[in-house]
Length: 258
Image 1 (cartoon, rainbow, N blue to C red):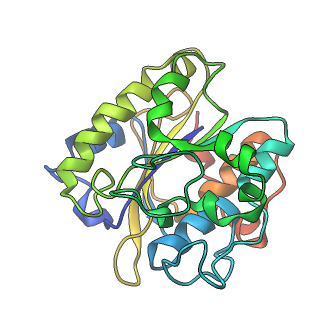
Image 2 (image 1 turned 180 degrees about the vertical axis):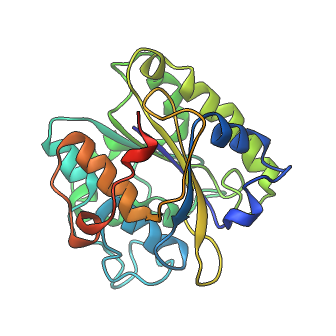
């Protein structure tokens, strides 16, 4: 399971856009959730919601060291680890493992696991799990070395936040292409999910695509889903208990899977 989360683009700027040919090819070839929505605004609460089933009271893009900006709740990382599975967060531009400060094009607000005390309180464990994106190429080398749960955030340019959609799509073509062609995807029933953290206005609709061996081909779902649905779908696939009522009550995205 690999999740790539991009930034701040409503569905109208991505789907059928000439600036996003690779993303649209994925959507056509695999499974598109055509009625998928973020939870709120701005960015950070959506990252927290997608990984813990709650915004944890966070309402802005605060930093982990700011007062009231810790998500002292269980996250999907806790559930995955307790189930005996492996996980990693790969952050592009992060200068070293487990970094809680912005650096260049790396924005910690796009790295949700740095907000969970259950992840950060053990520095050695954090450094082993929250790593620079540059480590992904090595981990893609074999099915055994790629963690079961992978969360990827591109930097502030590659994620379409500060740079054009075409820039992000070029990045996606390069990096998602590597993932889909890796041993973990060619030899296992793996899944790649590409989506955006938030859209615009109250609608907050974004693109979400399921790709890889576990995804249906040439399929479009019109069912209404949210980030909580994606979290619930991961939990259900692995027999994990939902983290909150939000994900427990969110509809499963099973129709996009084979």
